[in-house]
Length: 249
Image (tube, helix red, strand yellow):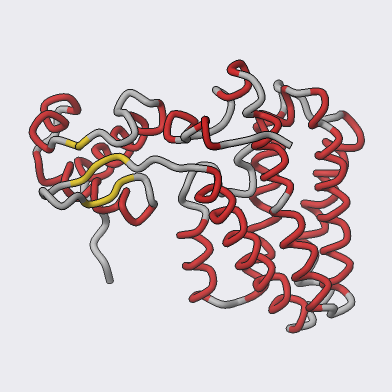
């Protein structure tokens, strides 16, 4: 059994991740163990461990002179991250469907779908209740991953969604804030509904295709968000994005 991470390791990881995502440590900047240890009030070893962990998440990368620097991302990087997530979640949906889940197996997923319907169709997602949508949306995706019953696939998906703009709920705040993107909540919910039906019917290929298309909604949200400086700040990890390479459609 692996030992639990020490409190200092956890503190260093959380604080360093926040410094990077907030832009307090700039994209391309070399990370100094000594300076960060003093800034965060921990020893250098937890800082080194945090840098290695953030490399796995894609937020840092090793540099030839030694140590790590903060990663930057362009259009292709972000689109690739979203596509990878969609591909892996599509595979999870296909495996789940091929296992022909029983009504009892699907009960939690249907309960989640009903709660999402109440929020999206009934009340409408707003900046006041979007955190509830994030919770339900992430639960929906996780239940499908669990139904696939593949620890290997589950680990790969966890790695794929580590980047802040690759997760299933990455742009919910943008959707809730921009009138022109709110319709995408309805589209996304229809995807959810169709995926559940495909799982019920054992339609693996359809479930896979739906999940891949579902992931691509994030690309539309990102492109819309980057049209103005006001909405850019709503994009998680926006300080890491090279905005000049992104063109909205």
